[in-house]
Length: 327
Image (tube, rainbow, N blue to C red; front, side, top):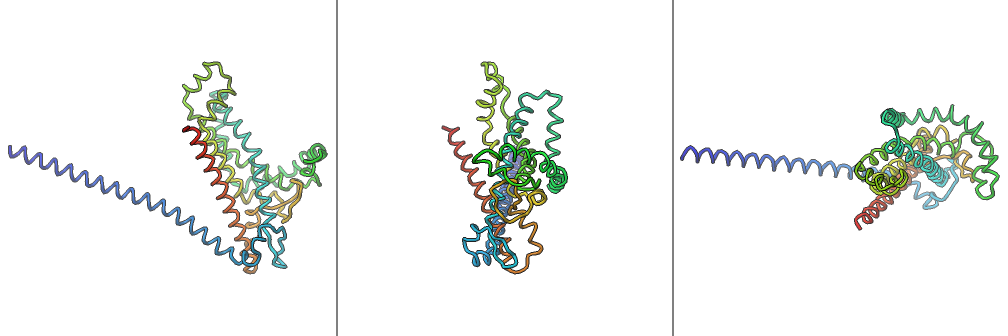
C-alpha cells in the first residue's frame, strides 16, 4: 500500500510539474506574440510621427494650399503636391482597370477551364512575373514598351478615341511614348501577378462538391463562377485587389522610368506627369534647403494617408460583406 501511495504521489507531482511548465510556456508564448503585435504598432507610430515632424516646415510655409497647388519650383521654393497626387491616383486607376479583369480572367481559366498539364507552367510563370524587380520593368518599359506605345498604340488612340467628343481630351497631344498612360499600363502588368496569385489561391479553396453540385443542377461555367465561386471567395478577392492597389500606389522605379517626371497636370493621359513616389526618388538626394526637403517628406506623408485611407475603405467593405454573409 505504501509503494502504491508513493507511486500515486510521484504521478501527481509529475502531472503538476508538467501543468506548471505548460502554463509557463503558454504565458511566454502569449506575451511574446503580444510584444510582436505591439512592436508593429510602435513602428507604425514611429513612422507616422517622423513623417509629420519632417513635413511640418512645409505645412507651416504653405498650409493646406500645399495639397491644392500645382506649382513645383525649387528655385523660388514654391511647392505644391497637386500634380504628384493626380499622377499617383490616375496611374493607379489605369493599373487597376487593366490588372483586375486580366487577373480575374487568368485565375478563372487556371481554376475552372485549364487542362491539368498546363496549370503548373502557368502558375510558375505568374510567380516568376511577381519576382521580377521593379527596375527591370522600368528598363523594359523605357526601351521596349514606350517606343511601341509611341509608334503604334498612341497614334491609334489619337486617331480613334481622340476624335470622340468628351473623352477625346484624354487622348490628345503628340505621342511621346512615355507618360501617365504608359506608366499606368506598366503598373497594370506589375500588379497582375499579385492579384492573379491570390485570386487563384482563394478560388481553389471552394470545395469541389459545391462546384459539382452547381454543375449537376445544370449551371454553366459562368453561372458557377458568378453565383458560387465569387460569393464564396469575395473576402479573399477583395484582399488581393487591395494588395495590388497598394503596390500600384507605392511603386517607384518602374514609374520613374516611363512617366516623364513633369510636375504638371494635363487633360491628356498620354502627356508626361509624375507621382508622389517618383518625385521623392528623383529629387530627395538633390534637395537643398529645409523647405524643399520638408516638401518631399510631406509628399511621403500624403502617400501614407492615401494608402491608409484606401486600406480603411477596403476593411469597411470587407466588414460589410461579412455582415451580409452572416445575415
